[in-house]
Image 1 (tube, rainbow, N blue to C red):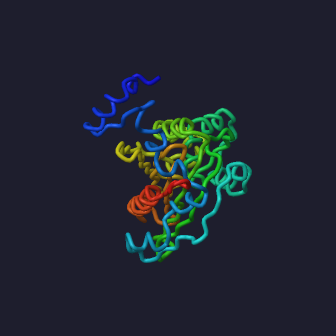
Image 2: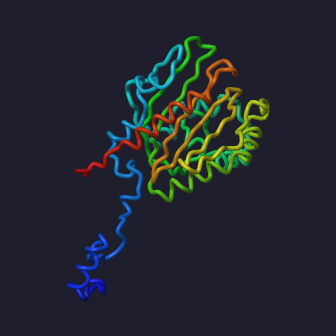
Image 3: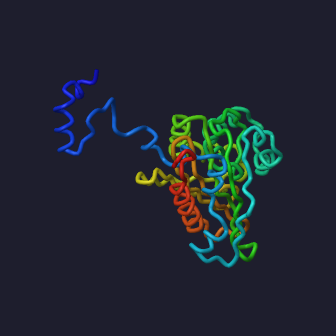
Length: 265
């Protein structure tokens, strides 16, 4: 029997005066009420996190913007054997050295997992199982164009997402070195800058250069999910990738906050 209810008559009177509940079997706050809204999201709601053409154009003016109206499903198993991944790996003429390849797989896998399509490894042990993503193209002329994705990635658990996110934040220097060794003939074309972490939103910003194309990534962990926005230049090294990534990612976080749990009344 709960000791706070042993003398029920007295307890009710005192608790009533104080505006407190008469009896409690545990904490007044449940785990679900502390969890982000995305933790309870359906697959349809995950797609709604991705900013639309209208949301982006309302937030910032671009000379040209095409946010694909179709949200595509990302499946890790399909990606691991895809032609796109193979071409991305082989595009820089990697050296034929298994030890170097193994180092790339170990040190750079978190960056491929968080930004599939930006860079490639040959790692197969992924925490990310699937996701939803929208391709976005910005810029009127090819020389000024940038392209990338707004993505929601799902791992098996919050612990897995946290571990992956920590590796993403802490392995930029070793991944840079590994990529430079892998693509030794053009080593100066690969660099991951030191990340910037926003503790208030649990967001990490990572800028850098891959195959001589500047990129910008913003990633936020919420429960077992990673909300990610990334852009990379298509031709010109001077095209801005940082501001568009910040704009699109800000919208995605607002959309995530607006999710209503499926069982909400």
